[in-house]
Image (cartoon, rainbow, N blue to C red; front, side, top):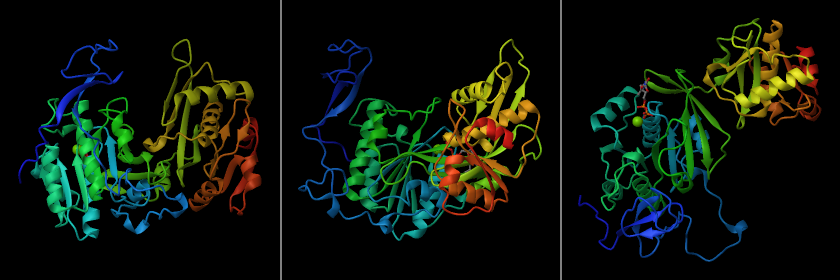
Length: 460
Ligand code: TYD
Ligand code: MG
């Protein structure tokens, strides 16, 4: 296929990312705002690229919002991995651009090839997987290993985005995937692959293609150490959805969450386990997360958490130990350490459990990260249990937000949390009084409604 070179009219310019000043050549310092190394290459365009009917610009006259037809759920492409489809909001939306991020080696390519195979198996068209990271042989090796080799899944090892687009125009795939956006380049820019200019331009071209043809496109993106997607922040603004794969340390569990989703909730998570044959869905993560729980050991409590619409029971562990140094250290994994510090202060001031002079370790078992306030009560109970050396009844779950005055505040999804706990054989729940009074369904659990942290600790 002929190489689709951009028109000679597309000239490179250098725009300052701080003030927007434009120079014809790269300069180390912007002459307008005097910032250093802010000039980034881009293509000078006579007119901005037009996007087709599927895109943000449709060129039509305004119509009543109420008359806009609803997005047809059947048009979504499901990959058959329910954990992933749910995070996407029910499958891939035609014409959408999705960014799949994660640290190196976490399983992005594995998840991608499994997803593409699932879509290919369910579709009559072809699916195109373009990789700039690995050879075709390496990609095929992984695909065979995870059983992802339907006959209509094509692979091409290519880093020239214009070539990939010309392949895509030729085969009109049901889905296009590009692994990774940081390895892509266009020869119309002088900047090296992975540079802000290249990442932005390549993503822009893939976006325009997705919007004009309706081909959903998945981009793999690398994440830097501090968790940011490498490359320009603009990439996150550009795409319709940002999915992230995360894991905790050496844990085999992989959590997929959406940081942004124009076509679904960002609250959903999908849980997978990395095995020898790829990523395996964990549809019942609660049972799995609780399997290794030590029963009758002080410092362990089960929290009925809810990430998104799905409740998740997790074990929160705490260990209070005499301070090694002159002052107490706090180490938290899976929960925010500032939140832990706040809870320790509330425990000391409002509930008569002072561990401020001790070392305190808090850990969420299974490598899960919990960011919702309902976990507060679990952390506080686990710390108090360890400090007092008294185990919490293993058939009790807790949830609730803890306020600075030591009050227990209501949280969302109380019914779903209780139902999940009942399903897994728990018999007792300690929950916010405000939630208790609003329950519409009867729970099979013994419900202990509390309005103060001290009352919760007494109930345990
Ligand atoms: P990979 O998908 O290549 O990660 P990424 O694209 O995010 O860099 O997966 C890398 C790791 O996953 C690798 O260290 C080996 C492990 N793995 C398995 O444990 N089982 C498998 O079936 C596969 C394909 C990978
Ligand atoms: Mg990879």
